[in-house]
Image 1 (cartoon, rainbow, N blue to C red):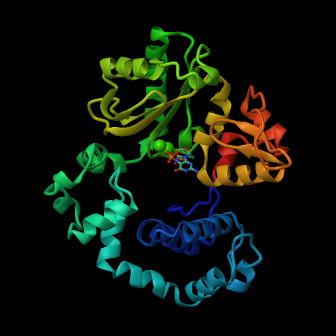
Image 2: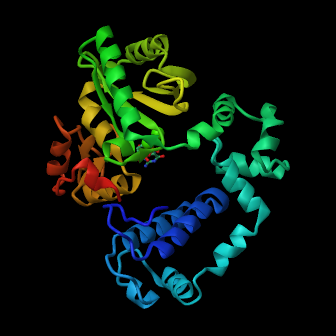
Image 3: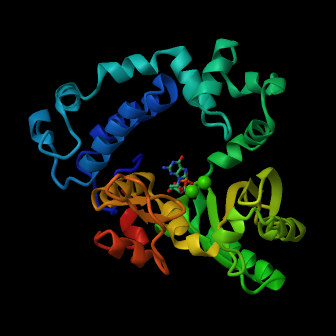
Length: 335
Ligand code: DGI
Ligand code: CA
Ligand code: CA
């Protein structure tokens, strides 16, 4: 939302209001840790970002879904004064600024940031002097703080995608690989790489029988050998978190790889493609239609509300159809 454009790339005449609401959302998430308010501000910012006309009053904004009395009042203040006192106060609060800064380090969440600030650590420089307070993930986040903040051009991920598919398929041609996240939603600049992998020989029944598998481990090892993966934050059977680097002169990037059983692949793709807000709305719709939708499966809910056996899914479209939701291409999920 930091751009003057709305999610579908059109000019946003209410860009100033959206900026302020998005900042309030971040404040609620990181400093107040009020997820309810975070969601409320985010939703309002999104609906206003897609509104084609310049709003003239808070009253007018209230007609939009997700804008209530309190946000309408703030909009009036922004329209008449060009700013918002509440946000000015937040900006002048040292502790709040420090928490916002520290949560930008990969691995540092709102609670950890608050704890560090309570210990008097308020800058990246000071953090570098207190490495003993950080875990492995946070240390990597600190080491690559500048790099991880840099946006990744699509071209760079396209190149990585080619290498990853080639190398992994040398290992085993049956692996299925999809790069999800904002990349799949067609964004031009991406903040990290989210990869979903499956293998036809591994299904959820294998998983339920606790059959140990090394599919993900093998991929990570292969890409490390190739030199693409340069750091491991964590590695389990179903989730790898780390860092990668394409070339000498490109920054180090955050990369997540998830391995899922083949029968859960499409629910996984849907989930990891996002956006987060899109997922929330789709899950809510599924619920209204009597289904439970999550990153693993789509299950019908019985009359008592207990989930039944998963619906058989062979594509993303199958999920939309099953819950009676108009199909949205990944590029249309940027809400
Ligand atoms: O900018 P994105 O690529 O969309 O965001 P991301 O890299 O944080 O995560 C990729 C997708 O994974 C995201 O679009 C939705 C899903 N996801 C990741 N973390 C969370 C999540 N969904 C929910 N609901 N909550 C999470 O913490
Ligand atoms: Ca991402
Ligand atoms: Ca990610």
